[in-house]
Every structure is written in structure tokens, then in C-alpha cells.
Amino acid sequence: MEIIISMLILLVLRLMFNSLFGNEKTKRGLSKADYWEAFELHALFDDLNKVKAVLEHTDDTRIDFIAFKDEFMEELDILEGENHPDFSRVSAWFAPDADWDRLMGRRGRVSGTSVFKRADWWKRNQ
Image 1 (spheres, rainbow, N blue to C red):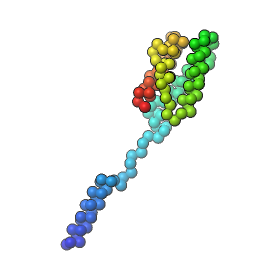
Image 2 (cartoon, rainbow, N blue to C red; image 1 turned 180 degrees about the vertical axis):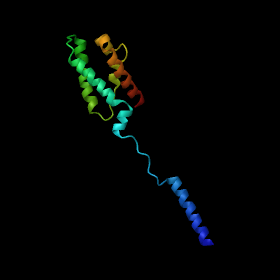
Image 3 (cartoon, one colour; image 1 turned 90 degrees about the vertical axis):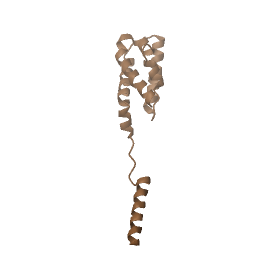
Image 4 (cartoon, rainbow, N blue to C red; image 1 turned 120 degrees about the horizontal axis):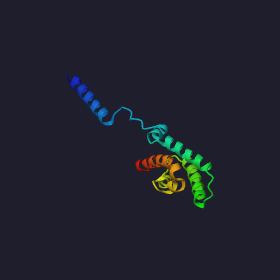
């Protein structure tokens, strides 16, 4: 009888230990690809590359346009190489009535709105 009680106590202790410290594997976090998809980073980089193409094919000799274009190209190269990109500058450039809207006017409004929405969302939820 004592053996049965001892075995029951050991079984209960084992169950308590497993429930406290668990022998289940912890849940796996998001992979880098899943993380980027969840935060729409692929779509954001697609939008930024469309902006890059527009800038490359726009013949504008204004000093502020050329300065914006150079800064944008440099920033895009930096962002593409980072593991945790910081889109603060991009968000500021593409905010409503900011640099992008001022330089491109109506023809850049759709792409500017899309870039701002995604960059700002990433920046706030990072």
C-alpha cells in the first residue's frame, strides 16, 4: 500500500513539475519573411522602387528636386541593407503636403500616399 501511495505522489509531483516548467516546446516566433510580410515591408519596398523609377525618369533641373532625388537614392540603398530599417525620413518626406507632394504635385499623390501609409505604420508599430 505504501508503494502505491509513493508512486501516486511521484506521479502527481511529476505532473506538477511538467505543468510548471513545461516540457512543451515554446511557440516559434515569426520568421524574417513572415515578419516583413506582416508589416507590409515587401509592399513598401515595391512602392519605394516605383518612386525611384519615377525620380530616375523625371527630367527636372530644380536644385531642390535634385537634392531630394540624391537623398532618396542614398536612403533607399541604406534601408535595403538594414535588418531593422528606420523609415523616419521616408515617412517625413512622403507625409501629406511634405517634400514629395511639393516636388511632384498631383502626379505623385497616389504613390506618395501609399509610401507614407506603409512607412508611417511601420515606424509606429516597430
